[in-house]
Image 1: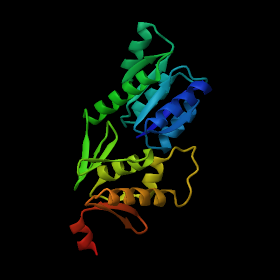
Image 2: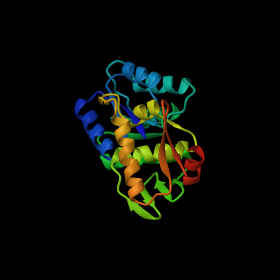
Image 3: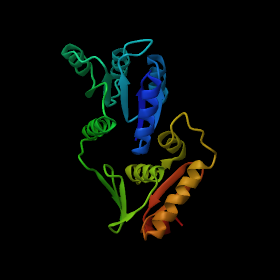
Image 4: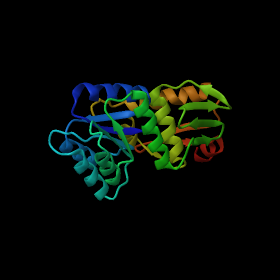
Length: 230
């Protein structure tokens, strides 16, 4: 899943970026409200982590603009304002949760995953195709019940492909979903990632395969589908 962190404190922003990336998220960070609005206008995110004390505008203005766009985006507000009125204003303004500074990273991560689960309407979603399964909360992938060790982006790729099946996973969508905007992505980065996942699934005994749809992207297929397309 891809997050946008809006935080002007450089050290905290870097800490949030490193921790959440280690936990399996793709993360973009911005330091002002205007940059946040621009990122939200051009990008696709699964959740927003929003500081209220921004240098150019109040974070509530960012949240209000996000809500007025008509597109729901789970949002956790970060703030040092501990007055009850401030917390109620944030929640009534459309925030899904409210975390007071200072906070533990583990608490923020737990609250973030909770709002994402509520947004998805699930507690633990299991995606599966053939003998391949992926648990979205634990990030475990299995083939015939046996765990397959995947790196972070390999797990993200598998989840994305299982979610869109039987549709084609568009390559450009993968680049946007799997990589933060600050990262430089080589021309063959996605192809190399798909190749590694394809090999790990095959070596694990998966009865599904990843087919390349030339000029478009990739699709997971069962053996009979692959035979029919041949």
